[in-house]
Image (tube, rainbow, N blue to C red; front, side):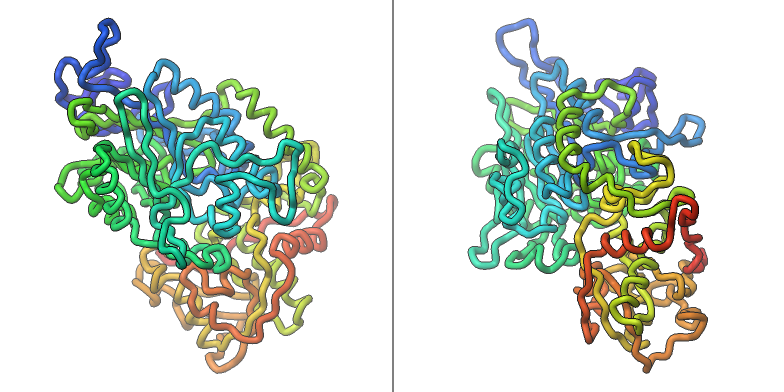
Length: 598
């Protein structure tokens, strides 16, 4: 069927850039040739052979109940003339309204998620071990989600508490009602208990309505132990995503469930940062790279669609399955800024999805709709409990401190704070390094509440650094320090570099025209203006995640003379308090410590 100019055509052969004032969506679909009775027979007594099922999905919410600030609360939209504009997006008050409106008139509708619903959350949720987010997801009528790596930030016992309920073992109950847990199943097909060799939570779940059945298999990335603190994954094994999904697809089919969706907390990197980029413009899958491509190409054709996450990117793509047929793969960015609306056409005769009829679109969670009153009430209740802690001023800034870029001002500020704190613990501390993934947000100059412009509150600091990592000191040789910097762009970080944020006294050149470890120009590395001596000993401050070798920095796990300090947020708060005032606010670092050659 040729492309048409009609908004929301019933079937489309390829993605087209599309921006409707009311929809703010990107649309993608697979060609379809269905019989005339493709849709439900609304006037007769018997259902038609084909039933459209709505699948609403999102991923990587990370407890962002309130609208995220700065770039974390915006999406980029590609315009018909090739220009782009940004749109404010996110916040569960608006997400609830959008999802509820999307479901109207849809008798068959499922809402699913791709993991990282909790963890690395702002204070209103993180202070209460993400109970507020689970409550919000229950109100959103979430049906099912996979686990993500951040579901393991506090360990598997805490994850099971979020699933089944009960008061926190240390902090107790926060409300008189207690905590009932999630109304929806968390799926963890590839997360096994080392002792029992069985999944720690359900591996799959089947949605049923009348004679329609659709199975969901949920997995997180196999490398979860590499991106979570060791304590969080203690006693667990993480299996290959493809092998696990293929295994449980066979189990579902043996039970007569032929329609299957995989929820995968692993993702890809689209060729554009615009949410409505035409992912298939140069052929199936050509507009996306990253781990999800190989995963999608190897998952059994029995699986009809993939809902993904982890990379915080937005895409609606087709990637060929092992039989060469295109299959829909989607991701809705992060922080509740987008949701995906996918139509799965169910064949009652075969019990399977008509793959050529799948269509999908990412929609912006705009803030121009009415707020959902129940979500407003929920946020207000938890903010009241958090206010005594969250409203406390910890510093002052003269402008936004963003967390964007290869080297970010926020990352540099954290590294400076950790160096200052490290030198309080041990005056011999030489430098500090901060992992970019631990910088969850920037600081905004504009006030979020009544604190006033330029005031940094504890709640805002918590949003930046919510992990409760400690600041650790370790000794390394100069040769090891050089190796650490090279591990940013080599080993497991070759394809997707993780550039550590350095304290102000460390500088070097990153030559992106080269490959692998050579991208770090060894002769350019300077500490306090001097070259690194491979034989000398250097005292380095990092957080506990990096000190354990996280993010592929195995050499950082080999330090000696460890000294464990306070949590990293306390170090940041102490630095801001000591180095800023209302009359002398802190200026954002220039982010010029790394010279980048492209």
